Amino acid sequence: MRVCLRSSVDPSRLEEYRQRHAEVWPEMLEALHRTGWRNYSLFLADDGLLIGYLECDDFDASLALMQLEEVNARWQKEMAALFSDPGQQPDQGFVRVPEIFNLEDQRARHSRRV
Image (tube, rainbow, N blue to C red; front, top):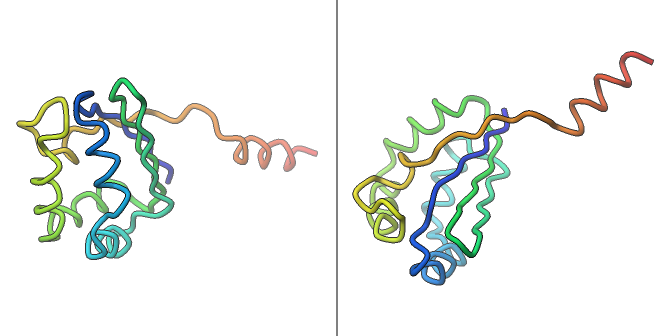
């Protein structure tokens, strides 16, 4: 499944957010991989809009498994101050954005019709 998420980084903390993601802790990278997060990317606009994209088998299951990872708790605590709502754990503040179009899915549907 493909998942798109949105959140908001405090605009005064954008550079720090970028720097932290330039060198994510290796144990965090491994935890994401181990819990099923694939092709995970973050996109950050200059106004603080944060878009996340990932592929996984079951997002709710992958998110739940990440909640069990000790490194995730440390990462979320360190990152919380960088978000527009610092009182909320960042990975709990993401809003899922529904997918309405995918090029490859539609191309595959059309090729089956021919």
